[in-house]
Image: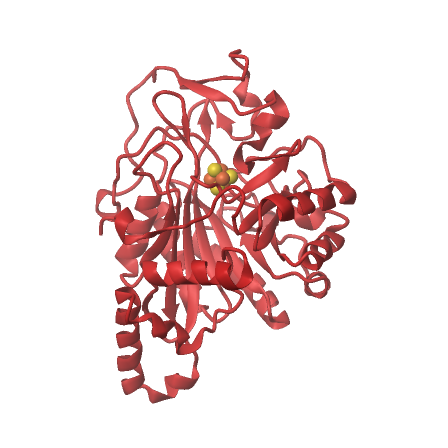
Length: 429
Ligand code: SF4
C-alpha cells in the first residue's frame, strides 16, 4: 500500500491553465473554524471589484469553475449576482460554504442564477452552536441534511470538505462510509490536513528581512504539541477500510519531490456496493479529453451517473478493468442492478504547505487555489501574509525547546512517508 507517483497521473495544471479559480468575495464569516486562515480585515468586496476579478481569472487562469469562497460567501449581499456573472461568462460557479445560511429557497435562487454546485465545509471543529462535542460520525447527520436539500432541488454538484486534525484522523472512515452510502447524492469528499504555524518554533520574516509578529495570523499558535497528519496517512486509513479506493492523480510539492499535496481518486459504485476506482489512464483521458473538447481542464464532474461508459476504459486501465469485473459479477448475481446505475464519487486529499528545514515552504505545485491580490495571482492559503505584511513570510526554525511529541497516528493505520516540518492552514469556504 505504498503510494508511487509513477502509478499516478500528474495533473497537467499550471498557473495560466488551471481548472480552478479561487474567488474570495468577503472575509466575514458566521462561524469560527479552528483551522481557518482568513480573518476579518476588509469585509465584503464590492460587486464591481468581484466582477473584475472574475474577468481577470477568465483571461489569465482559463478555469472550468470558480470556487466562490471567503469568509463565508453566502453572507455576501450580492452573492446571487456574483453567481450569475460567473455563469454568464461561461464558467461553473461553485459555492464553498459552511451552509449555515442555506435554505431551500436561497438554494433555488442560486441555482436559477446559474450555480453549478456546492462544496460544503462541515466538520467537528467549527464551533457550530448545536454541534458542540459531537464527533465526525455524528456530523454525518448535518451533512445528510444538506445533501438531501441539494438533491431535492436536483442538478447540482455536492461535495463535502472536512479538515483533518490529529484528533479526528481516526474518524475519516466514518465520513467515507457515510459518503459511500449516499453515492447517489454525494459527488465527492475532500479531506484537508490541518496545519498551523508555531511561533515558538518558527521566526517569521518579511520581504525586508525583518522579523514580524506572526501571531497576528489566524493560522498561528505558540506551540502545537501534536503530529500533523499527512496525505499518505489519510490515504492509508481510507485504503485500510475501503480496499477498492485508489487515487489516480496527484500534485506534488514545489520543493520536495516526495510530497503528495493533492491526491485525487474517483470510486465507481452504486448504492448497493462499490466496484472499484478509476486508474491513472482514465484520469488522464478525462483531463485531456475535457481540455480537447471544452478548452479547459476538469475539476468537477457535473454528472456522477456515468452509466457503464467508464468501463469502456477497461482495455487501457487495469484499475477500471478490475472494477468492470466486479460490476459484471455483481450483475450476474443481481441482474436488477443493471437499472440502478453506476456512479462515481471522488475522494480528494490535500496536504497544506509545510516548512522545510531551510525555511522554504513546500507548497502545492501548480496551486489550484490561486486567488487575486493586487492584480496578481497568489496562493490563497497565504493571502493574509500579503494583507498584513505585504507578502509571503519566510520562516526560520527556532530550536525546539522539548522533545518531539508522539505521533497521533497509530502505526498500523499509517503509511508514513518522509515528511517535513509542518506549517499551516486548511482550505475552505
Ligand atoms: S492555496 Fe495553499 S493549500 Fe491550497 S492548493 Fe494552493 S498551495 Fe495548496
